[in-house]
Image (cartoon, rainbow, N blue to C red):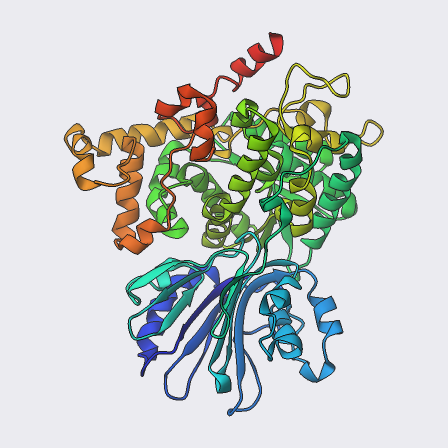
Amino acid sequence: MCGIFGVFFGQNLDIQKIIKHSQHLRHRGRDGFEYTAGTDNEFIIAQYRHIVIDKSHGTQPFVVGDSNSRLIWVMNSEVYNHIHIRDETDTNHHIETSSDSAAIGYLYKQYGEDKADLPSLVRKMDGKFAFILYDESKKFLFIGRDHMGLCPLYWGHNSDGSIYISSELKAIEGLCEDFTYFPPGHCYSTTGGLQKWYDPDWQHVIPPLQNMDDQFVQIRETLINACKKRLMSDVPIAFLLSGGLDSSLICSIIKRLRPDDEIHTFSIGIKGSPDLLAAKEVADFLGTIHHEYNFTVEEAIEVVNDVVYYIESFEQVRASVPMYLLTKKIHEEGFKVVLSGEGSDEIFGGYLYFHYAPNRDEYQRELVRKVTRLHLWDVLRANKVGHAGGVEVRCPFLDRDLIEVVMNTDPTLKMCDNKSRPDGAHPKMEKYILRKAFDDEQQPFLPEKLLWRQKEQFSDGVGYDWVNGLKEHSERLVSDEVWNNRHIAYPFDAPRTKEYYFLRQTFESHFPSKCASKTVPKDLSIACSTPEALVWNKQWQNVQEISGRALNIHEQGYENENNQ
């Protein structure tokens, strides 16, 4: 993984000024920096490298051809089928590297030079990626981003026709007049414009009724394979372990895939928090080498400013701060890659508010909304916080094959019904079909009580004191006078709490442009819902607390529902 950057179709670009500005990406690639520029300074393409694959020959930008016909590209990626791509393409296109980031070069040389069907070319890659490719003699620019936006990418334009592209917006703000995020599942070329290459049926069609038992094996096998793919690395891999279902299942699967290896798991929380206690139980059960870190509210508050800068958002801060502290610790322990459980709640409907879904069709529509907007939320947090801490975060639950299986599953099978016990023992709680797919009495993946543990939001699970501390800190910093005039300071999308006012101010101190603010979602939400789902319960319309604690399903409320 890395940070990539490019400017094209400029007129006598100030290369040194641009390079200096691109250094805002240095945290994404501490292992080296290289760039290639046009002979007339009409373009520059650069990479900050985070070495994970091919330590010796993976330096980018890749350059193929002589000075009159150079093909140049950079790629932020983990392409899990890159060996297959290399083997199926013409040996005349051989590139001296075993890096997975060579994949787009192989594909373009083999299939793309006629520009006939560029989306199908991108579709051949299995993994996460963002790339910039430039065919110099043809002045042809080709850009693409993976299906979920797992790798961040932004692009902007100036009135002179120049195009700016960057892994993070901080490297192009101030250089170009207008910018936004590059849409996931799309590619762009100077001949074809912006094209959607990822357009699955589940985004448009409600899956038909299905038998629950038929799904268990398919879900289990596809998730195991997704974890296996993500072990591709030339450096050691660590594993996040919150004690929740998703990270615990990943760690359990890895232990089975590599029974003789030392498995290092990491968790963080305020002392005595729910996540730490559950994570310790899972680690003891699996026999991992477990690293537990405690943090204080004061330590968390101290890094809020840095975290807002790194994630380029005033959303997701509650969850980003502890994850940032943890990824720094993981990096200090010598790891550069970590597996995490992001994405499961979106594809399986794991958030507590899904209990209120009125019917199967609306349940599926909410899943689609959640998944297609994930690049603005947890995916953004995982990638940017990870790189800020010095590690690459991989998410097996967002594997393209697994998404296809789960999102094409009958939504009725995912819907919560705590009065129903399909197996005669367990209530049909959130993520029931995932839990049941790994419910193996003979060779258990997890202890019974942990496999059926209720969902906690990460920011809640690490300790409620942290969320309360952030609120109290914001109350102290934002005076009542300032708060009462918030609609003057923010006539549109005014902050709804003092916490949001404080975080919004922090964001704008780093990113003052309107373009930057527009990249951050500002819609109302509760317990990670989309704004559209707020109509499911009238009481949600005026709730200010956004976490799972706002729902009466949570904790004691959940037990009361079971007892009805």
